[in-house]
Amino acid sequence: MTTGEPCFTARHWRILASHWHPVALSRHLGTTPLAVTLLDQRLVLHRGISGVAMAAVDRCPHRGAALSAGSIDNDLLVCPYHGFRFEPSGRCVLIPSSPDLMPPAGLQLQVLNVREAYGLIWIRLLSDGCADLPHFDEWSAPEYIHVQPEPVDWATSAGRQMESFFDVSHFAFVHRDSFGESDNTSVPPYDVVATFDGFQFDYVSTVSNFPLGLKHLNPPGFLWSRLFRVHLPYCARLTITFPCDGLLHILNVATPLSPVSTRVFSLICRNFDPDLPLQAAINFNSLIFAEDRRVVEQQDPKQLPLDLRQEVHVPADLASLTYRQALHAMGLA
Ligand code: FES
Ligand SMILES: [Fe+2]
Image (cartoon, rainbow, N blue to C red; front, side, top):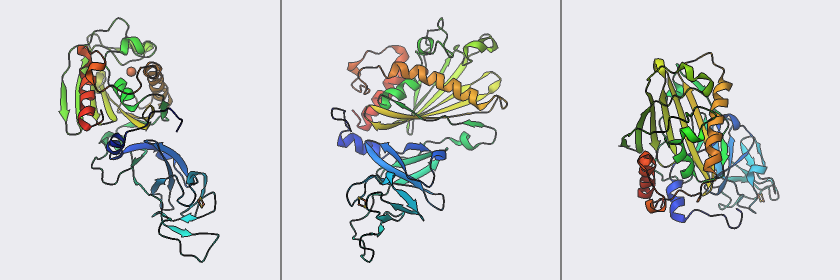
């Protein structure tokens, strides 16, 4: 870590480490070691012979080398420095400089809980965490088309990124080049409802989700429902109901690499327009996220203020107020 960068407090780290976070796309993980970061912790991932994803802290217990710079040989992770070999359980099974020596018990990698779901590799750093993965059943439903853009790193906190995902009063200003309607700024009141792992709200407005060039497709007077489901701390799903009852789901997961650096994973699926090229959906999504990112990376401070007195709130901010209170209640203030 660069000197001067903020780090997580021990308490925040423990809370966040008890939750699952995606760290890579499944399609990026093969049989060569892959380095990723989560909560300031460097990790090494690889896929075993059986195809199962494995993860460990990216540090050799011998002399601290980065195992992600090593290799895999017959399901064994080989350290690049002195060639020690580690089996999937993390136990060292060979010390090449003393091949007849039984490796001491201390030569043990810290292996981590891994899950693979929705095309993502998820890690939980603490094994005693109680949280489960968010549900996203539509991802595997046959009537849906899936799009999985590349993750994007944002120079901000996971909280700021998340809040921008479900902020409903910025469309007319931030999304002028995608779907925003500059003359449609008023936010009708909406209600927020608590759920077992967060909260949800259905934001109903006349702001259409059609891109600028296709606004003429919007049926006059159509009310657009944007149902946001927030799974604390850093996952949210948006379901947009299109005219003709088409459903578009976008899962936004903000993985905290550090307190001010976030890798954003997004999954998109829809049950309409089967012939529209997937690349068009990826491009539209990228444009929207780039518009958000340009503003959000400049917010000051980068960490989301959980003391409600630090920023000023208006009625449209009910969801963000709820989010800040919920993170505060989790102990993340
Ligand atoms: S540092 Fe890994 S084998 Fe020596
Ligand atoms: Fe946005």
